[in-house]
Image 1 (cartoon, rainbow, N blue to C red):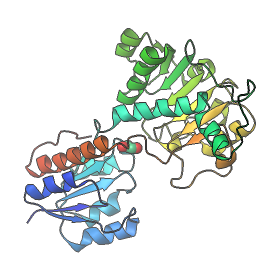
Image 2 (image 1 turned 120 degrees about the horizontal axis):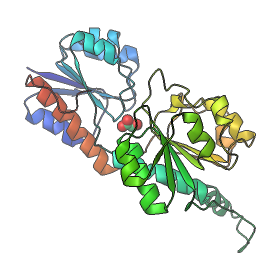
Image 3 (image 1 turned 90 degrees about the vertical axis):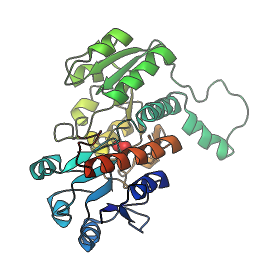
Image 4 (image 1 turned 135 degrees about the vertical axis):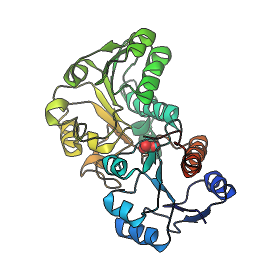
Length: 321
Ligand code: GLV
């Protein structure tokens, strides 16, 4: 019997695919992320051949030891910073992600945050709900016009490029970017200007949007020194991973008016958010839902299941990291 452990309920289409492939599938019954100890205990219960993990699971040597037969850990996420890739490679375990699933949606959510901030949608929605609207007033909720402004993208993989495309075609903005690898396609297609340092993007952009993966190098890429380089009228958007921004430094930058606002879908210590952040009005916060559409979630389940099926056939799974 081939066995698969799924660390938390995902859409049924993925589970059905695994069952149709003839696998015994155990899904964690808990409607929350498992602690490391719970995950290890669950994996030790049966000799699992594959694990379908979520971005909230920390997968390292201890977890690999608990599932010695597992050939693949299929992460149900675009990101995979929750998995010790080096350790997996040493052991010959496949690690896969679900890159197509939701990437364009993350770009749309990024724009949702940008618009919520620059059109003051979130803030004025609160105003309406509190019954504060007393009639049209030319002096309230002055937003920020986007056309002609500069969008600075840090990290121009698939999501960053999708955000850039929408900036140019949807909002007639100028695009500048920083990446460790120069993205000539982005330059040719969207006239995006490469900046050789993060600092240059921060100094010049009216909106800065983060799209780098979380690694040792990108942890606290945006720190207090770099926040201080941004224009006081600029907005910072993060739909990538929370620890890329030093959240305490961001709270300070917002409170002291060093920057104009922030749109955040990810947080440094999820599900906690930094002290003070909820009290700041020029901030829009969403609970790590940038890829959350029904289509994307189904697509991610299909991709994760397919990665497992292919790996257990002894072949290289399509989304191997
Ligand atoms: C969400 O953050 C993902 O990586 O899919």
